[in-house]
Image 1 (tube, rainbow, N blue to C red):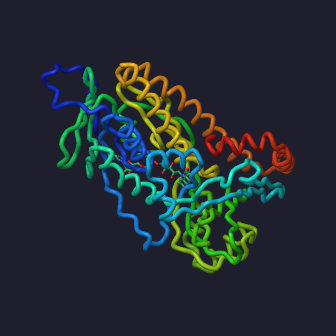
Image 2 (image 1 turned 30 degrees about the vertical axis):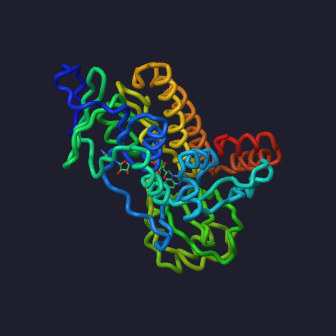
Image 3 (image 1 turned 60 degrees about the vertical axis):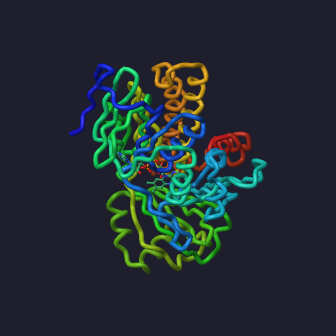
Length: 406
Ligand SMILES: Cc1cc2nc3c(=O)[nH]c(=O)nc-3n(C[C@H](O)[C@H](O)[C@H](O)COP(=O)(O)OP(=O)(O)OC[C@H]3O[C@@H](n4cnc5c(N)ncnc54)[C@H](O)[C@@H]3O)c2cc1C
């Protein structure tokens, strides 16, 4: 079991000059953080256990896709990678239609109502990660991959990382953990999490439907959980079907014809019959919030800090907002001549992001609970609420702006 040795050692024990920041975890969030910080003139290393596989347009669309909100697109654009992502394979969508199986109530978001062309883009996780990795060298990020952090030691003015494998040791003023929901670094730092296991899995696949998706993200709330059909550029839809564990296992095991029929029924045949599908996979769903985002010379970001229900499609968008806030915080500290890892500096990042992420995470959780109501009076109340929101344009606009990160 790895442990943190939190001690003050004499300067004679320090090895080599420290970088400003070491980011651990090179998924979408960690890679974006390393690139954003390096571009801002903050010397940065990126430590990642597994190098991402090269993305190719000749490969089928990867099963893991995300809906990128305008705030995320703006950050990726600023980092100089958005054009390559968009021209490689990204699917814009201008509408979102959400409806409730039990009450029949629905809500429709239209980008034009918000004075925008689009609500967002559906993109493959590995395409975003790959394009970010392509930009790291030119930005001067020191890549340490494959390498895993086995322990770290907090010294007076830096953090010393011990890496497994052949990788050399590295030290930095600040350690940024973007190592995913299971975050080994969060455990090493002794930061606890709170939340709940939804006892659900998100079944994912890309499906071909009888009718076109019309550039619309569709989501139907069913008593077993939400089903999303996200529009892909090649005309297929990518499904995220949240189901109780045993139901998810059953759906994974169905033969193709039975799966097409079950999914057709679950989607209320909104896009007609299902006529083709890729292999299926499933991911466990949990709500998980770190009790704090900081420790000594240490911060959390991305899924290491917060994992949310995919019903709002916001997980990575929250992570990229963490990146923008961390960069603003560290640049302001540096420009003011402060230590970028001073507790008051890290508190600013924690205060801003933890409260925003908590509100969102609890909001998505509340939605999951409200849509879990089965009793007829509660279903009727929910239907009334949804119909009201659909009619009240200021509230609807606020919801759309919030989802867009505006
Ligand atoms: C079914 C499903 C659907 C989703 N849909 C959406 C959506 O539509 N929109 C959206 O915004 N989000 C969505 N999400 C959430 C989104 O996928 C995540 O929020 C996002 O992938 C998190 O990125 P990350 O970089 O924080 O973590 P990860 O992608 O988990 O990356 C962590 C990285 O850290 C590395 N690592 C771990 N430990 C170490 C170590 N000790 N040393 C070195 N490296 C290490 C790992 O190899 C990995 O590369 C969905 C999630 C699920 C499950």
